[in-house]
Amino acid sequence: MALDMEGMMKELRGTYASGKPKSYEWRVSQLRALLKIADHHEKEIAEALRCDLNKPDHESFVYEIASMKSSCQLALKQLKGWMKPEKVKTSLTTFPSSGEIVSEPLGVTLVISAWNFPFLLSLDPVIGAIAAGNAVVLKPSEIAPATSAVLSKLLGEYMDTSAVKVVEGAVPETTALLEQKWDKIFYTGNGKVGRIVLTAAAKHLTPVVLELGGKSPVVVDKNINLKVAVRRIIGGKWGCNNGQACVSPDYLITTKDNASQLVNALKSELEAFYGKDPLKSEDLSRIVNSNHFNRLKNLLDDEKVSGKIVHGGQRDKTNLKIAPTIMLDVPGDSLVMNEEIFGPLLPILTVYKVEDSIDLINAREKPLAAYLFTNDKRLKEQFIRNVSAGGLVVNDTILHLAEHSLPFGGVGESGMGAYHGKFSFDAFSHKKAVLQRSFAGDVPARYPPYTSGKLKFLKALLNGDLVGLIRALIGW
Image 1: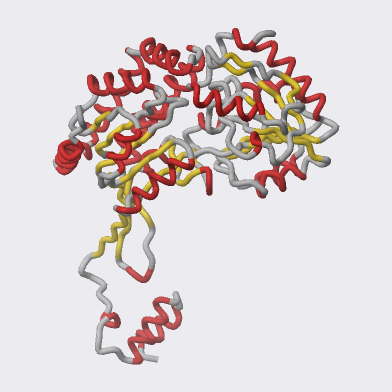
Image 2: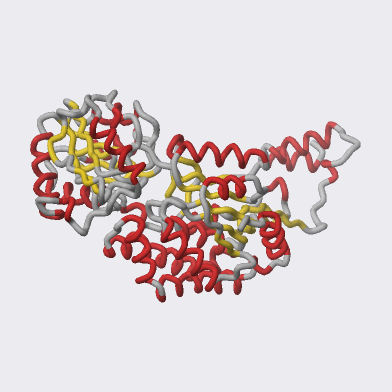
C-alpha cells in the first residue's frame, strides 16, 4: 500500500501545532516508553540483530541496547535542566536589561538511520528529537530489515503515533520523505547519500546533521603496553561489528622497526579471541549482505595487495563471512586505501618516524575518528593539536562514543553537526535569544534629531569609555 505522505505530514504538523510535544510531561512519557521497549523486548531486539548481521548477543547488548538505554536514562535525568532558559549577562549598551537563551523545538523532524547498528543509530537521534520537544519520523535502514520491522512494530505499540512515526522501505520511500518540508533532518550513513540528503534539504533551507564516516587511522608508537594496545585495537575493529562501524579503525600506522612486533601481537590476540578458524567463530559478525561482501572481496583481490596479506584473508561467501585480515605495507594507490573499508580488513602503513604519521593522516580527508597509542607526552600534544578529526582517542579506540559529555560528530567529509547527551537535545533545538527591558532607562541619544552631543554620548557608551560618558552627560 502506498504511503500517504501528505496525510502523515498533515497529522504531524497538527500534533506539533497543538503544543503537545513541547510539554515536559509528553517528553518524559515518550522517553519512558523507549526504555520499556529496551527492557521488555531485549531478546526480540537481539534476535533481529542476529538475523540482520549475525551480531553476537554480547555486542547487541553492550553497543546497541545498553547504549540506547543509557542515552534515554540521561535524558530523563537531565531534561528539566536542559529545558530551563540559560541566563546570560547583558552589556551597558542595553542597560537596564536581562538576557536568556531559550531552547525551543524545531518542529517536525526526520531521522534516516544506518544498517550497521540499526537499533542504536535509529533510536539515539530519536531520543534527542523527543527530548527537545519535536515530532519525529524514523526511517530505519532497509538493509537491516529484521531490525527495521521490530522498530516499526514496537514504536507503533509503545509510542504516541500522532507525533512519532516509523516509515519502512527503500529508495522510493526515502526519496518521498526527502521531498517533504522538514524542520531538521538527521542522517547517518555514507557521503554519497549524505550529498543527496543535503541537496534535498537545501530546497527548503532545512538544517541537517550528517553523521558520515571516513578512513579512521590508528597510530601505534613504540615503548607501550603492546598487548593492551592490540586488544583495544581488535575490540574497536573486529569486536565492533567486524569492522562495519563508522568509527572502526580503518588503517594503522607504525614505524618500520615496530611493524613485525605489532603484526605478531595482532595475530596472537586475534587467535585468542576468535580461534584458529575465525570463520567458525560465533563471536564475529557476518558481512551485512552479498553486495558488501563482493565489495570487500574486490579490495582483497586487488593485485596491488595480493602479496601484502600477512594474516587472514579467508572468506565464506555462503555465510557472508570474511576473517580478520591484516595487510602490511600496502601501497597508497591500492583500492583498500582509497575508500572507507567498513569491514574486517586492516592495512598497516609504515613510516620511519612516528611523527610522520601526522602528515600521512592530514594528506587525506578528515576522518570521523583518529586514534593514538603512545606514552610520549609530546607526541600526544602534537597529535591533538595537528590532527583534525571528528573525535580523538589516546590509548584506546571508539570509547569516546560512550561519554555523553563529549559531542560525537564529523568534520569535513566525515560529517557535520554533533549529538550524544545534551548535544542531542541541542541538535534538535533552536537557541532563541530573548532580551527583556523595562520602560525605564530610555536614552534620547538613540533618536533623531541627531546632534554632535548625542553622537559624543553614543561613542563613549558604545566604546565603553566611562570617563567620556560622564563628560558627555555633563556637557563637556
